Length: 344
Ligand SMILES: Cc1ncc(C[n+]2csc(CCOP(=O)(O)OP(=O)(O)O)c2C)c(N)n1
Ligand SMILES: [Mg+2]
Image (cartoon, rainbow, N blue to C red):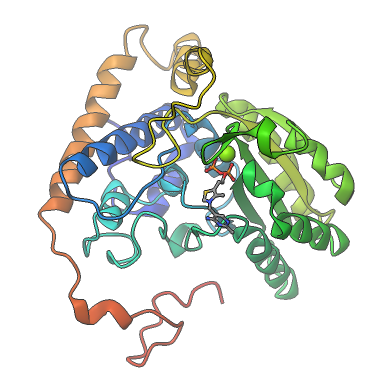
């Protein structure tokens, strides 16, 4: 495989996304990792819960290919795909989820706390809405320090009902902060469909209240995601302020690992499967003559093998010592380790 998917440098993996074939490979990798995580649960290797984002791969890769590694990203517990797209390695993600020292946070954070300073990923958060004001802070810090950097905050449709969403959008608009707010509208917040919880079905409409562009995007098409991102990122870098992008997408799994998603409308999942983001990009690559007409299945098999090798490497790695539990709890810990004191 010519792909850099297996490189152990997050930055190299990020830069590799310039290649169309790598964009497809990364989306397949995200899907394979999510499937392997589900299996690792069954095998008893993961404690706690986890939130899969299979079906939402185009959003992750479309965002990652449109921003610089120096830009900052906040996202939620449903963040495995974003972390992989941004450049975190498969061992870094699987290792973290399995609580092993090879994890991107040394195995101390788990599924909901992925992090990688080298590619701008702030620690992901379980508290919904929490990342939005943090992204405002990152954008304000960048501007105050005269940096060209922007911040991206990724969150769900349900999170747009949280006070922090409204405060963050208003604050960012008033100060014209370089922030792109990206809502992944997957139609569900936990076990409730959007029409039961949210006054609007199109989250982009909420941008009007905060005097910023609000754009509805086909979140199944990586090129549509990237095009919308590029416009919003350019506006932010020009100092013209924030945007709200709504990615229309769908999660194939339930909310968390033990949720069979019986609350879905009949036929809804099948409708979305017909617009699978991996198939959509693969068809384009065949047309662009970058992928053989029968090239998708072998590529999937190759990526699955690579993910399996990563899983075996993780399972052969140790758990952190109990004594590590108080390490990294502040930027400058007692032993002077400033590993997580990044973005000066
Ligand atoms: C402040 C806060 N309130 C409630 C919860 C419990 N909770 C976890 S996920 C979730 C639904 C979020 O839905 P959405 O924003 O659409 O994201 P998705 O899970 O669909 O990606 C809720 C209410 C939480 N984590 N944080
Ligand atoms: Mg949702």
